[in-house]
Amino acid sequence: MAKKSVWSDNRFWQRYAAWVTGFASMLLIWLTFDTISQITIGTNADLQNGVTKRVPGPTVINYKITYEMDKKRGHEIPVIGEKEMFFGRDDYSEEEAAELLHLGKLGSQTKNCMNCHTLLGNGAYYAPDLTKAWLDPAWGPEGSMQAMTGKSSKEEAMAEFLQNPSQYPTHARMMPDLGITAEEAKGLVAFLKHMSSIDTNGFPRNFGKIQGAIHGK
Ligand code: HEC
Picture (cartoon, rainbow, N blue to C red):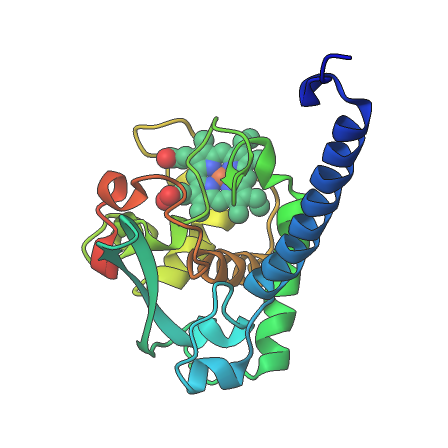
């Protein structure tokens, strides 16, 4: 009898399927644990001890956030710098900072920012991507928004804009007034600042080049 080819052998394919399924399951379990460790939010202690986390702890709002080109990775990565005032303080406790971020997150959901903007890859592109909006130089000392809103800091200018966007139109599309209160605006700005400190593997692509936000000017 002629030797049967391995390719037409049922047992070969059964074993093959079992091995592939087994290997894929192991890989998925490993990837799940790897991802969990990558996306787990850091702590205040991490920030104080210079431990780099992909998602820094809430108290990152006490620090200056800049971006630097990482040649090896081929895109900009966040750099947490010196302490910096945020609404007049640089000593928010972990609880206070987390509460502000929570308020901002709830605000972003109730006012549905994603209907027009994109946050961390989710949302629309009717309005600018908000993932790194905190680093948009328009809000910095050399940008136009502080002068336009009559405020002397990035966070105050942004909070004022969020409360009354229709009073500060640019040449782009206008953001409508959404009835955001002063307290909500503060939370939203904290939420945006924290989001800008997340290492998103260079997403949105080339934002540094587009916005000139490298070195956090
Ligand atoms: C109906 C659409 C719409 C919604 C909803 C909306 N925005 Fe906007 N937003 C815009 C538009 C349009 C602009 C651009 C305005 C301009 O350039 O004058 C803008 C601009 C901004 C900017 C400035 C962006 C930058 O890079 O400098 C920020 C910050 C912002 N919005 C935050 C928010 C937040 C936070 C929410 C949710 C609470 C929100 N927006 C909801 C339409 C919207």
